[in-house]
Image (cartoon, rainbow, N blue to C red; front, side, top):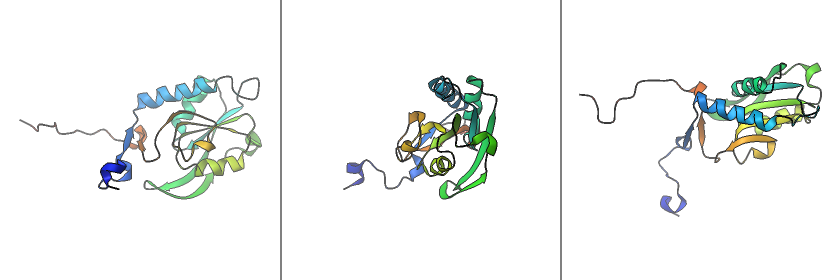
Length: 175
């Protein structure tokens, strides 16, 4: 098959199919996630705590916890990427043991589920927790209980905390 038949550009790197997310967009999508989760917890619809998967889940978790008025917030630090490539998943910091138990009533939030490997590790630690992400890719989707937007597996999401503003030369150049 040719590139035209498959719809793939052989000269394009996988991350060049980019989806750029602004701060406004992550805020809107995280609020939408909170609305979807409102009243869905096991404790008369409430959640005991929010746990952010660092680092990407921190901004969405903060917004979700604010919108749902959840004051107990913790983090779990997972390393699964080295310079934009997936590597071995490793837990660097776990949340408070007394808080977590088996995860019942805990809302675990991340920005994105890609392959699902990170969430698989966390789910094995807290099997009764509810897993929510703002964005989901098909391979990782089975690991998520709630998400807002699905993107294709070959899309690279550029989050606002990974980007810097800089001057861009006008298309027609300068005078």
